[in-house]
View (cartoon, rainbow, N blue to C red):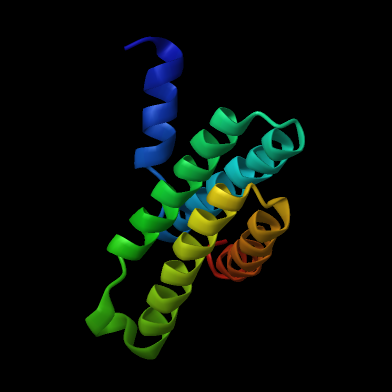
Length: 119
């Protein structure tokens, strides 16, 4: 592994759990913004690739929820993540930038909350 790769791996593995969640949200938002650009440019394959990357991140966020310790918050997040995944699936099929933006808006709200507690 080169110096840059080692630095990136170290940067990720030394983050706090809250900061990692922030990074995941930031990544999903970034990929969805790119997906909107690809929709507008009618680059359908690229659009699907970036929606897929964001969906993978949301699936990962969903899979690590601690349903026992998280209680009602974890239950609500699980429902919200499921909605986002379905919504992005429909946005991908319909090539609908507005639907992608709706998920960006939801993720952005969650991101701001995580940023506030992950300092």
